[in-house]
Image 1 (tube, rainbow, N blue to C red):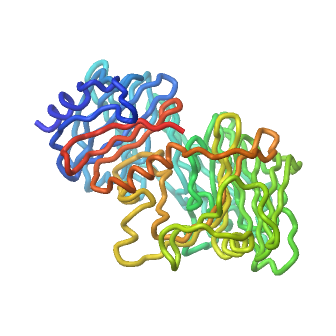
Image 2 (image 1 turned 135 degrees about the vertical axis):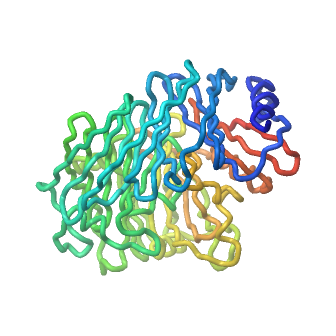
Image 3 (image 1 turned 90 degrees about the horizontal axis):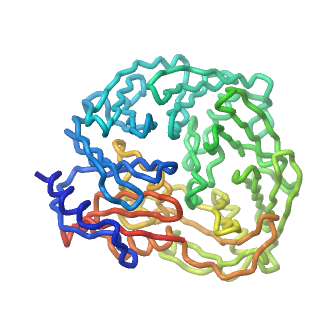
Amino acid sequence: MIKKVFLASFFLSGLITFSQEIVSSAPVNLKKNRDIFQIVNQDKKDVTLFVSDKVKVKAMHLNENMQIVDSISTERPDTKTYDNMIGYNISNNNTRLFWASRDYENIFTQLYDLSSHKVVTQEYTLVFKDEKILQKFSENENFYILTVVKKSNTFKLHIFDKEGTYQQQTIDLNSFHFFRANYTKTTLYGIFEENHLPFEAPLTLQNINVDNPTSLTDAAKKRKCYFKNKQIVITLDNNVDYTQVIKIDLEKFSAEEKIVKQHSLAGDRTYINSNSFYFEDRLYQEKTSSDFFYFMIKDLDDNVINQYSANATAPIDFKNSEIYQEGGDFGGKRVLETSSQFIRKVNNLHSGLSCYHIGQNTLITFGGVSAPQQSGGQAALGQFGLIGALISVAVYNPTMESFNSYSNRKVVKIEGLFDKEGNHVKSELNPLAFDKIRTFFDDNKDVSSQTLFKMSDFYYLGYYDNKTKEYIIRKFAD
């Protein structure tokens, strides 16, 4: 009965009518233990919205105007075996969901064919011999699982195409050069095996989606990957003197290595930090000591496009914002007054930077973030109110994952605006869609069943208001 109410009263209530930020608001009796997530087809400008509980999964096809076109439901895979929805691909405009066991060795797929109102299932048994899973990627036609082979210089790709056909590809990196932070020679596996706890666990690889603003919690990771346009770009910043870039071609299944040097800073390397962010085939690098901050834009052939520096005794002339601090011993938010405070605090934290398009310009966030600071009930709250607790193992929502918890971390940051040549642009910064969503959740904490996705230039946020018993969709723009 709840599904009928959900469809009739929510989706057929006029989603195409935009009233300021609200797309739709409708009464609905939505029970607990229910996940709502979506798959967006940017090429077709439509959305498949999924409503899942422990028993059923319902798929609803929405067009560009957020009108429901069709729907279909089926049983959820056995939760005793398949407890994790790990990704998707699209086959002839139909969506295939991938469910996995905890070790990923058992894969169950559901192809939602809305034209025939059938759900076609298939099971796979994968063998990860001496492999560690690093990351997974979805695009319109293919779904990939990336692994590294133990004690080797080898990546493996486990690939499912739009027909559901499974294959493996091996990426050999034996000609590449791998060194630990102290220049001890190692292997590809050795780089991923390095322990950066409590901030970054060994054998992990942070996936970055540059279409969304990236939090410093993600950007400060030393091992990051970027998936787009038939390639995976992996950046490794374990050594403060350079960034190692690995570009994997997903058509030729070949790899290319680039070494992009960091700016040289005097002093004990133990107390120097560095990191990078890959954006539009450029590398944006940040390097700090206790009294010096250096920012450089380079191409992947190590050529300098532009560069900036700051020290403890002069204002930072390439920023467009105040110096903000959140969390820490003082709690809440405050503005720091001096460059020396910013540089010293960032160097003592896990430093990073991130890039995001604002029109023709690039907004860059510089700063540092601490490891999680568990205290009381604070850790359950995310940067956006309760949103930090939304990501359960059963939900696949990369846009929602762009929100990371700052409320239980110390964060120090500034923002700067730059043009295509890397020149600083002096301009006032307007709030981003993510900022507006953050403000919304600061003021509206009694919500549940949230989902967030981006289509074209807009973000759509759906949530259940526990007080008014309404499901609401809002539209946000940068």
